[in-house]
Length: 333
Image (tube, rainbow, N blue to C red; front, side, top):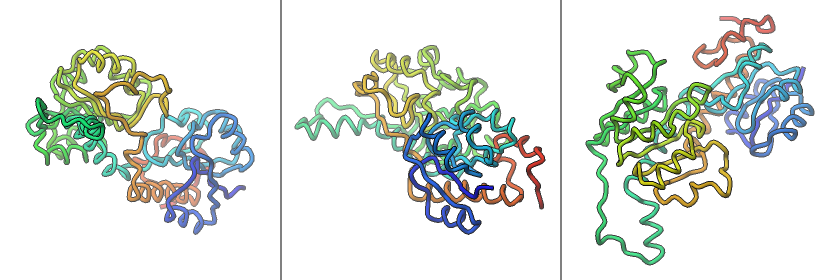
């Protein structure tokens, strides 16, 4: 059987590479955003026993090309680029690096919030273009405002810590989160998504992308937001109806938005976002820091090593835990 671990990206943290090599596994890399035939042909050639999923979609064609594949480990937590039902059918567990990049992404959410609220980008651009825009300027003070977190996992909880330090009142909506988690983090849960978006001054997205959450921020919910509302997304671009957001910004129906992810990455060259001055954008790098990359890479690699060695893995890290019931796996204490 193969000993190759395919990384669907150009690199992996050195400490993670060391973990794989110490287990006699051989890492192999792909160019960024390899997909379609390029990805399938690479898989067919390398015949990996495991995949660390960074960029590109792991779909049925990939599974068909990889008969030796035994485990997929996501370099992060978003698994919308992996066909989970196919993996489960084939008895292939899909692991996530829970909480490993929470600090970095939460910091980036705050950076986007301050950049939008304080108009940092547009004021910097104006100053560089020779404009001194202090006369008539009225800034925005965030302390005392309310923020609503959609989803309340590790990243949202870290964001809540930062928000409370800046004097924001924090609310959250997550129907799958235990009630104790809200009280333990001193965050007030709201009973519905509509109640959250209509009540809060800032909305920050921290939800996974799936069939239930796609376009949860749509024209109707944008209409519920306050005229001074700010929308932040460091999760998945597909959570937002981008045409509806572009229209709301163009018409001044919300104050602004900060986005680190998009439905198509990168967005098309004719996307209306490019001409929107109320929007601050970054290229899906919220969790891309040296510290987070090391933690995520190590967790992703260790999960592969443990699964292949027949060791137990924290069930909370396995998206499709039922896949482990397949007879190919033997588990020890």
